[in-house]
Length: 91
Image (cartoon, rainbow, N blue to C red; front, side, top):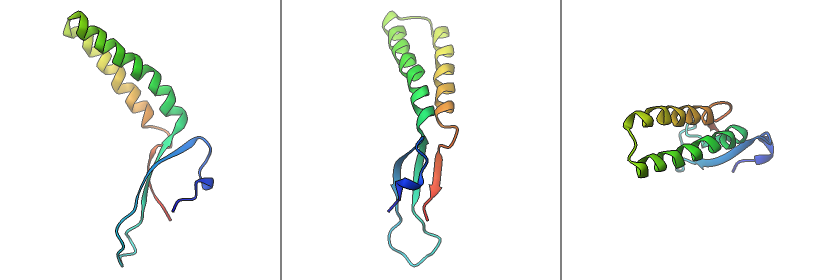
């Protein structure tokens, strides 16, 4: 369905949603494409943040320590979703 050779090497085709057979020409398949470099760069701080959250829970730490941790996790998620990442119509 999708010719992966048309994608750049730094992009990763994650999923393709194909509509059911219909006569509507506007029903096109949609592909989720991820910027591979951003995905892996953000995976490291997300993993470390998750480990830190587990350590804070086990240590019964103050909730004030959780707020900066959540900010880091949110920023790394936003970084991962940037770049060329997105949903594209397949022709």
